[in-house]
Length: 166
Image (cartoon, rainbow, N blue to C red; front, side, top):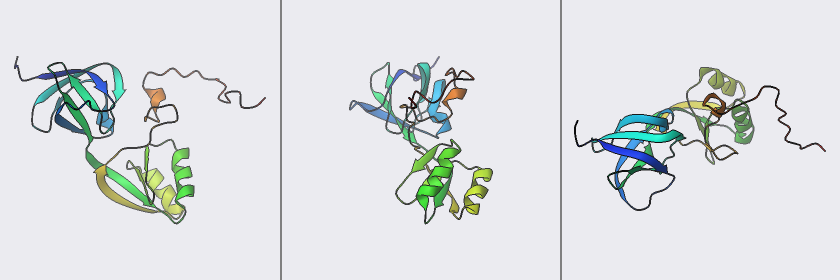
């Protein structure tokens, strides 16, 4: 076994000032529990977290050896969406429960030909770009809009009204 394998068993949402290296990961690759990654400087890093975790851009993996590896959002293929009525377009994107990065003048989503055609039909301009992807976090504190697919229990027939009607 090579002694150069770093190990991280903890993750924090922000650095404590001890960043020694970086890992650049796409949105999908930032959702992990156990995986061997290669840092920007070329070192091997075993990530072995207690549970599957959504790593955020700017978060850090805490090394057992001391120090932190900062997580960076890697450039990846995305769709850039602009419109004269971006609020309306954002509503339609949100209604599809797709991860979305919201900026003042545009939206960014992962490539999806069905949503692309829907948006064009609604009058939006859609362009292919390659950029880091940091979508909005969900209303319940996690950025994964598809959380039900990843071990969270979801009971069919559950009342989703949450007692808003009295």
